[in-house]
Amino acid sequence: MSFAARLIVILALLAASRLAEAESARVGMLMPVSAAAATPNVEAFRQALRERGYVEGRNLVIEYRYAEGAVAPLSDFAAELVRLRVDVIVTWGTPAAKAARQVTSTIPIVIAAASDPIETGLITSLARPGQNITGVSIGIADLKGKCLDLLRELVPGVRRIAMFLNPDNPGTAVGLQEARVAARTFGMQLHVVEVRDLRELDAAFATIRRDRVGAIYVQQDLMFYQNRQKFVDFAAKSRLPAMYERREYVEAGGLIAYGVNFQDNFRRAAVYVDKILRGAKPGDLAVEHPSTFDLVINLKTARSLGLTIPQAVLMSATEVIE
Image 1 (cartoon, rainbow, N blue to C red):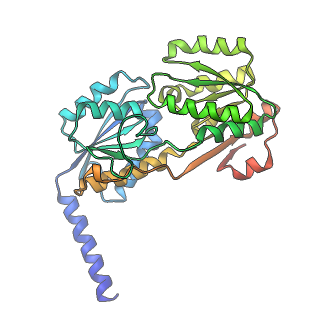
Image 2: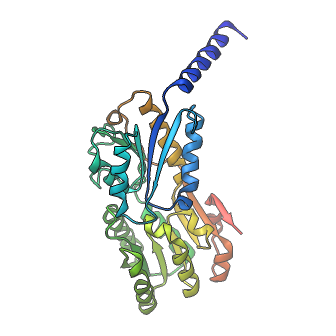
């Protein structure tokens, strides 16, 4: 081994030793869903931190707060994390990010996933977000258009689409506008179904049965995600093709999903946390767009609906569930 190579190894070992001996970093995770629902994303985040030298129980403490699919507890949980004097708060979803921002202007906030942070008022600039917030967005141009286009390919001639959305979600308005533009382009009619909490879900399902829609589109919302099996079961019982924005719906028996790979987002959030713990200011770290997307198709569900998936769609899928 050359002298230069040995020197690099020695410096890396010294850096790791100093990190291990340092006072434990304290990270708060503000999760709007249950611990079980958050597990894949949280584990991706923890693994990315381990790769950077942070190990729980040695030099890292993570304070987990789970809102079980409800928005109301987020403010109290965010305030609790502030009282615990965590070094960084990691949030999932726009409501969680807003709850954290409302209780602190000094503790860094890293968005692991949220709708367009400019449109929802979290930041004013992607390049220099300023203040104490940065992270990874899930706001991408024409996601709704891509989803509706895929639905059109799977169900030729479909015209009337029931679109589930939560009007209390700050990111809903932007997504709905995108969907309406795409629907007009494809000659589709959107039947908007608003669901603010689970008490409204049965009535929403009844409305869809009465209105005889040709397919379902479930817009991204963490309350919906927490209760995804209800949507999947309704679509199956009603024999309606359904488009989702999260792969977990398809793993639960849904037809097709296209959207952001959230585990990748959480891994990238860990990079932000590492930079901040090493002295970077969140306001100087540019907010990034998602870079990894999933297209997942359930062939068993397609067959049960009598649908033939076009070969071009199958070839572009990241995963096909048999």
